[in-house]
View 1 (spheres, rainbow, N blue to C red):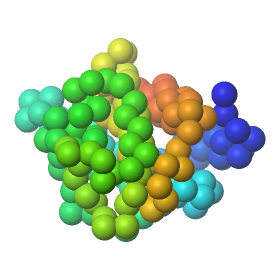
View 2: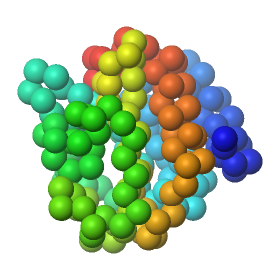
View 3: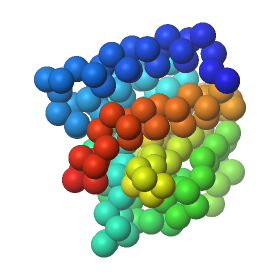
Length: 161
């Protein structure tokens, strides 16, 4: 179940993804920017995509403070763990995680949701917050639906990222 605010943002995202003059990366960046601006606790939003040959995640689109973590090995940090587990990973307090990669000293919590294409985890959306424990089950449901929308909109072209 999504909140009314999530539903409003989802409508905006659907409109952005249907803009034919945007490339895949431009569309993903627009989604990141919308989430970053419209959802209060979403201080950094990014899409990482998998390179299965090298077992690495690569940042392809984001909104927020630039990060040096543009490539993350499978298994490392919250994102790398999601690449292996294929499951959402909600971290209310990042200081409680031993296997955490700090993108910024200001990050207090993180939510990562995998992005599937034809049943395969090809990437993920990563949300960082400067607030302790701001994410809810509604955020997870919203981001799961958003990842499905991205997957169905861009399809196989996501594998080229």
